[in-house]
Image (tube, rainbow, N blue to C red):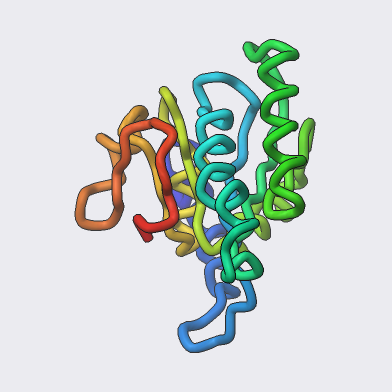
Length: 178
């Protein structure tokens, strides 16, 4: 069978990987992507805070402000965050003035999801805890580099030290890791 036991359709992802941008092609901007539910264990709040500290709060004083990468968040169901927590996260998105695109309650078609992962420069998995982390496997199969925390089975199961940079979940700069 062409489906890995975790549910990843390797044949479909392989076909999609043929459309990946080739080395030497001009890249206009860097897009970092994360997807999934808006749950505390997913660490979206940590990612937003780290992103804001690194790219939004420093940006106004920087001569490189127009070179800041973009963070694209596509979150589905919401559970576990208080309305105050969500308001704080939305406040960071607003302060970042366009360097964060947050698509809340976003339900993507399978093709739109694959396109989002395929067109990302980096997939970020800021998990506090996570089971398998199928989105990490899908991004990696599409050839998208992954930044993941050590909290989740991806660190143990399939993201080895030779192919990834593993980080403890915290509010720290992520861009220099790449």
